[in-house]
Length: 225
Image (cartoon, rainbow, N blue to C red; front, side):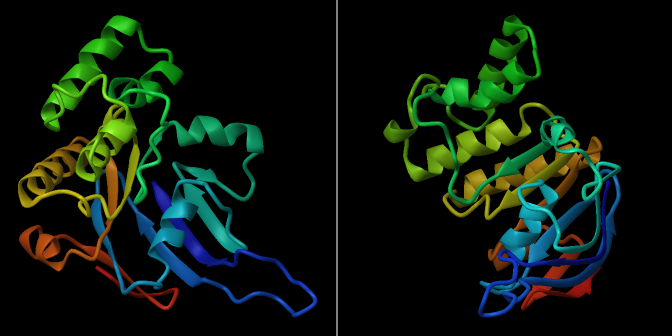
């Protein structure tokens, strides 16, 4: 599902001052279909950069990266949007579209995929009910609390049952009850075949839900269970 072979990443290429330092160094690991992995490490370790590579926001500076069976470095740019539709992402800053309601934000991946509108309405209504927002379907992001926006972002990421699901601090704005509901959802998706990677600083959540982890420190993979 995902394979890193000697991958390095820097955000800026050489300038008059010389090459900028790499933010990720010599990453080697693979993730198979349906696995759940925590992504752990201190602030600045490179967790968000690693996720950005996996959801194709950036390309590796060196090494070989395969995502969903495709060599990202060799894939034509026109193929990337189709690949991204198979990847669900929960961003730390939500990234909801402000001009769309909660319902329409969550419906967007299904509509892009061409799902019938009747199916879209049924699936989105059920998903928003499940995350506790049945009465907030038509609310806009500006009318939602941080925790509510987080739940909309989670619903949008999982609604199309992606092959790969990446979450950057998905419980940061959730209370303990909602965090546990999210973990139930992610565990079920993994059981059904989605590869799930969750970056977090929440040590209590990790302790309550033991699972293998990728451990980053200063841009290097120092642990892979």
